[in-house]
Length: 188
Ligand SMILES: [Ca+2]
Ligand SMILES: [Ca+2]
Image (tube, protein in one colour):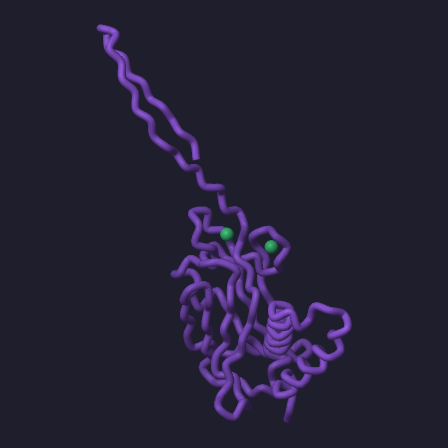
């Protein structure tokens, strides 16, 4: 914060001054990153109904809710097939994508999600910094992950946050528990 003093003097030499404060906010030059992917399953755990993306900061709402900024597709070798997205809803730093048809959990390793670093999928700052999808610290770069990769990242993040994945001596124990939790993902 800077204090500015303004003094005015008339021809007769009378003068008076006023002060006011100016706050200059640091310019936001970082793009939002996707820090978590959570998969919302049906009651039996066999199908993914919704995909929830957690961003590192608030987004420009209109862009966050533009379906064209996201793509789902199955990739098998060179065969790429789009998976239709029905809706996208933004609320408080998270984006919820709902595919038209629920996705079988068996298919998760071949289903890829792309979030595009366009001019509208940006943060909420006046600079409108685009998504930093490749997480290299510079706005720009699409985010591309298979849904199974995304789910693994979220479990590892959670373990790091809760401290379960800190001490080296606890690592094998933690990995065992994460594999157990991931088991549901790959079970036939
Ligand atoms: Ca930012
Ligand atoms: Ca980037």
